[in-house]
Image 1 (cartoon, rainbow, N blue to C red):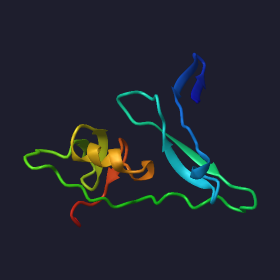
Image 2 (cartoon, rainbow, N blue to C red; image 1 turned 30 degrees about the vertical axis):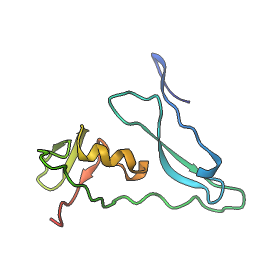
Image 3 (tube, rainbow, N blue to C red; image 1 turned 180 degrees about the vertical axis):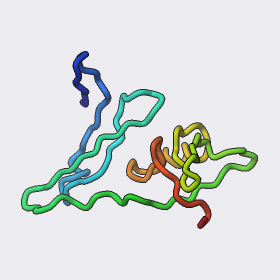
Length: 125
């Protein structure tokens, strides 16, 4: 279970259940989606684990990744609320119902498209 602590007190943020399969063979360096977190947003907990005899942590997740997502026929959007003020990248403000949300439901947490991510290229542009 994950709690925060501040001058007001402590708040329950959610939980992550780690199974041995997630880290026993090669350690772990990834983000796990937290359960019981706020229902409006996804929450993640970054975890680094070295196993006995391992000198270094596993490599960090890639800072960029590529996904292919297609809208359903007749859909008007992918289900993203974005900010494009810098005129170079799309900053994801919210993931709503749509193709991106469906993609996230089958993707592992490090490869999910979440609030605060940036889209740096679409269709090679």
